[in-house]
Length: 76
Image (tube, rainbow, N blue to C red; front, side, top):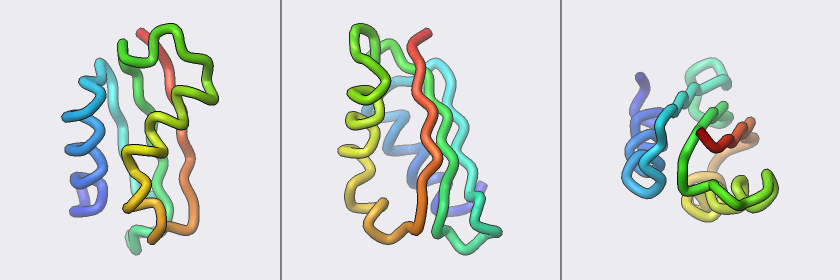
């Protein structure tokens, strides 16, 4: 796991207590694009757009430095 992947993983784990979380740097290692697949009970009752807004809000400072984000959110 790269430092960037670990930073994203640590933040999302602390804030959303996911039952499943996969974070991958899909930029070839330069840290400019990430793929995140997260399942969390905290998404229960939220539609997909609202789930993704929750994640984007948590990652707002990091995302400013990225070129792209592939995000998949689910409830358990």
